[in-house]
Image 1 (cartoon, rainbow, N blue to C red):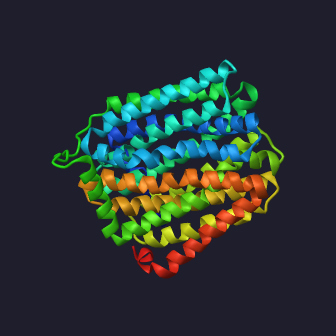
Image 2 (image 1 turned 45 degrees about the vertical axis):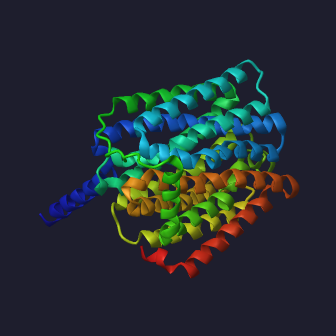
Image 3 (image 1 turned 90 degrees about the vertical axis):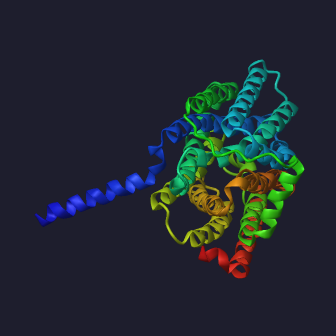
Length: 418
């Protein structure tokens, strides 16, 4: 009898943990969002993986990989802050439908150029710039849209499940792209990505949304923007989060740009190897996202953030010295876990303290610091790798990231107490 009671208690405990892990999926709108975005993001990762390898095949240049990454990342610097103002003024669902449709059309253009063998590196640069413009308006709306799909008590879980969705796509998309690239070529990867946007557009149009009260427009766009910047400047914790995001994207994530070249030059592989490397990183990040989702609305988020700031660059240092493909994949799994812990905790802590009426603008500033650092990171990593090779470049980025993690640990102890 006692054994039965223990078994039942364990069963209840497991079911409670599962329910807590996937709590946000109890909301109809969020289920639609999760399913649609999962398909769309898998397609996006297929295109990203295939596009990077195509660029390297066309040019043979790590520096050109950096140029493509830079082109995609310049528009956020130009438009994302304005995108945050737009997200606070207009229907976020409508804005997302427009941005997702734009990215779908750009994917079909790239597919057509590749099918007809007309594609040139400069085409990819221009189309990447176009995708970057769409992302500059999409990202603030997408992040602030979460609170329109779930109640505030499940916001942390929804953010974690968003990361789970993103990283599941990171595992599946690159692996499929690597195989398809070898079998039928990159054009089909771009085509499938274009088709995948239909899923998220249909999901958005099918939602039963009760939007948050719109902010009355009494100020100019510039005044709204200044208000958001002033709020960030006056909030010490938010400033710290922005600095962490900027430093990680500028130095820590620079290695992602080099993965196509790494697959060929360091591991002696091909397009499939590149896909497996991207997927391994995504698998680790998926594990991190699921771990955070299972914890629910837990305490000690600041301590977990601190763990991530150290775990991610330390793992990159190890990765830089590995020349075995299986070991490299294992190390990328751990690096993905560390990055996800860091990124997810930043997002959760930020969304937990920001005022609702400024949510779109503050998240646009946060997204700008994160995504805005990536093109510069891509550019410097590609240029440096061209001169001294990929491994020393990754080592430099990891050391800079590790130094900043130590600085935050020593000089900003308040982060660990959150």
